[in-house]
Image (cartoon, rainbow, N blue to C red; front, side, top):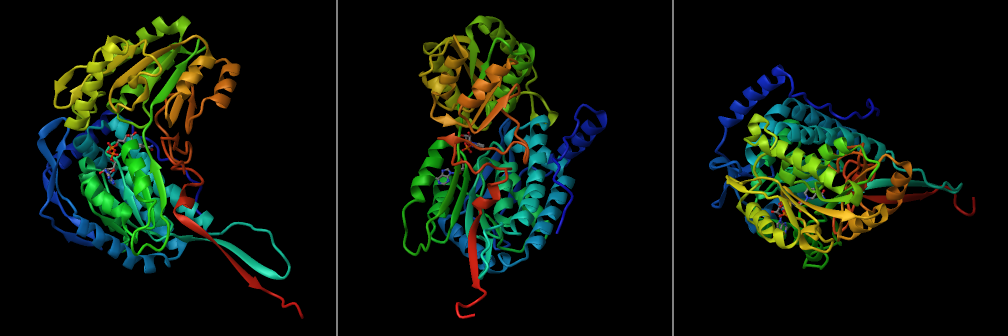
Length: 520
Ligand code: NAD
């Protein structure tokens, strides 16, 4: 079986009038669908629930994007049972057939790409420039995993011996729970589900509460591609209810989670014990937060660096696990560079508005996020020099905050704030900068701007993060090109979009057949 080599999905160009026109049409199409009801989908059946969550436009909380039927513990259990039933047949579908179905689904997503962009704008406040990279990555997940599956399906070479025939091959694990966060509402639930399903597993997906309408759009992509009922089950619900039941369920063999450190570590704990009826230990992936640092040295191209730093700190309002939240600048260029970053932040903040108009700056996701960010802003004057104070403008809009001269051990230099908030730290040497950068409990992404090859060599060897970017922003990983995931409290590290990712969803088996008996 062979396919043309993998290629990343090209991005759309919103600079052209034709593209902007097409997006206006999609926005109006989606606007006309706002407020619809979405049921649970278990074993392919649509089911209502007494418990409904109103998923609201973060930039216009009076506007309901979707009325979401929320699952109960019983629904979570029913979904696991349906996934179990579906596993027998799905795990035996030939790998090439699974791959073909996923490629078909990728094509459907490609056709619905602009519609999805509009849903992302309304439900999570992500503008087209930011969302397009995400949807392109989601399409890539179909293409990438289909190819990875066909390659792994060949098995791997093992050492031959004359008297036996030995085979090393991969089997699916069983039923998995996929639990995803709000901030990459398409590529994360989809990336985990696609890999799990490609591998021959069946899945119960619990998306983030705030992104449940988008999860329904994604479900339709699989359904329209012909995925059999029960292979993917969609059970939106509250984390501590549905999520918790799923991760502890005796028939769930693996958990793929992306979200905060607090929830990820809780899931790690909750999946490690045995419950009645459990027949195997769970395999668990927890991809969590970051406190990502960007270092700027004397040899950097400062204009470029300032743009990249501001974009990675304030793009999508800083709500990316990979966002730069600490800027570490060498003393000699500190003042001049900070001024340039503040200028860039001003420029981004000046273009605030609704994501459906592709404005540069938008809302944070909800009241809880706004409250958390505001509490850090209020505490900031005691932790450093306020250079740019973020202000709440209503409807979850909070302008960017930049605090200078922050001590490395201060909470604003240690804790993930997950909003448009940048802590600036000074360093006397590159060595000191790297020490500060490494001095947090997270290790997800990091960036260094320097043109001196010796400086670049130094950071390659000493800056310890899952994804290190040299002379570019700490955000914007592409499937296949930048396999993504962190260390320490940032994650367990199978690296989505990388050559090892699919293996997380598979178990290897060795089959040995004796060819000659000793007396022959
Ligand atoms: P979150 O941890 O609050 O929620 C993530 C998911 O976990 C949601 O679906 C939620 O309902 C569920 N959940 C909550 N409590 C649960 C429980 N007790 N048991 C099971 N599930 C439960 O995260 P969020 O606010 O939606 O997303 C932001 C976080 O995600 C940030 O910390 C960010 O850094 C992180 N993130 C990490 C990556 C990565 O690749 N490392 C990518 C994106 C986001």
